[in-house]
Length: 498
Image (cartoon, rainbow, N blue to C red; front, side, top):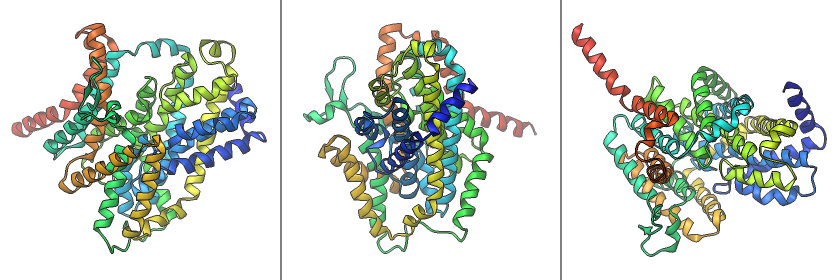
């Protein structure tokens, strides 16, 4: 294995392979900054450019574009509250509050290092479980999908301590919005109000951009005349970057936990990095000694979201490579690019062409390392945007958000949805309602409903508790839900006894 990885790395770094990787990294970071397009859209657009490349160079180029976009998206997520890709939405929850406190360099460094470590752990787990890949992937079915979504919703309780009632209202609103569209049982439209656009439900990207970027844009306009978007502290950028590196090392348990959760979520086709990052974020809040800081600038929230997001890609490669079943939209695009260049995916790849597997692993790792170096090197220049006046930066955010949302599908209705969610997000933030709870419910609501009906129809109600993985997930979610209550009861009895 080691010899194969070394050969693959040498092939990736040999000229002109390195040039294609560098071009792909630059394109990926640039596209990641533009909301709505994301790595999947950019890769799909650039597949024709790879026609004339050598297959090894094409793999490096396409993987660099697809996997570097997340690092570009974290820049705007942290600095101006615009998630470049849906998985980056969890990064905005604490990344932007850190920027407002003058800690943007620390947040960028922590997110970048956590992304690299998460990618390394995800790819290491990929190589470790390849011999058991078939059994692992086939062990997940409808009950496991439901329990994963249910566990994610349970994390809402960990994120709304002190505001449980408002958090539940926000989660309920998110579930209602997730129900918009065709009923999964009889395909009748729900809450569509005669609009064909709503038959497919609310797209997550316009909703995310509206709730975060649009709401922040409105907040900036309400603070007209402010000298800057965030408060800059007296410490230098380099020292703050070092603080981010130290923070990542100090929260190594969070990094490992989030990476394992991200990899496990990536194994399940259809979930993707958005679900992984929010589940890891909620779990980090649950185990944190300072959960009250989450949503207000907790660096471990940034670390958990980015580590899970990148480890998810390692898990997503497993069903893509072993069965030719893409783990998500990004993996579907990559699969198309691999098939186009004659890369055989499926069981025969593991049996006859392990060198291609090693090449895919190094093509997923080396571009991330290069992209991380570029992001850290450009941090000083990127942070200058935080010194702009709010009423100057807000129109720029508006233009970028509108272009990104319109480029997603070419629908002006998407832009209207973004504007509606902008006002919803602004009102929720102003009155203390949790946008995090709404987003988690919106992301997981459709999966929860669909997998519930599929489980009942296929396995019966007992299917939730008779399958080992599903039962284990249910027990974990119950422990996460009731552990704080049990801890308070035990602590109260001990104090009473004392």
